[in-house]
Image: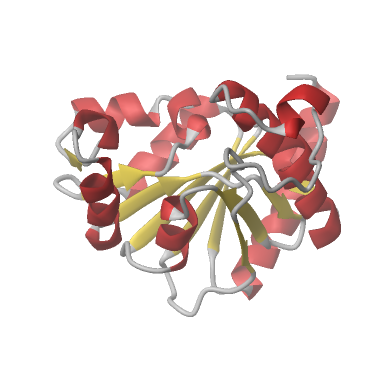
Length: 209
């Protein structure tokens, strides 16, 4: 990555990390994907039950492969015939892996969900939640974060899943009520009551959508 962009990301990440600290959450800065993977694995004890909610960023840094091949109890819903049962197991997991659709530079996380399994697990249940967040997802304020989540992340994900929503055709949120909409629940995480539960790894790269 360009040296000037890296320097900017380092400085911005420190601001985000301070914001997270003020919200009883813990932030980390990784200069590359390899460092992000190392930080994540340090946060996950061997033998832990681990699950996730469709986190592309975790795949991109190699975390899903590492968990699948390591000494962990990986609850991979793709390996379950009963998807609902696998999703419910997430609430009692030791670690839940996620990303954010967007976040503010003072540490507020924004997520949109269709089935609510991801946002509900972020809010309640798993003992630890680890976010993998590329620096491309940092926004100036909550309004900017909501706009990014609705007009960047949601249309791309709807296109990726082959859904029949207006945004797959326009590339922007149309505030639809389509049966295929994935914009059903919005979660804004501005504070964690439980210290050491939420960890956010900021990665000096463009990750996810």
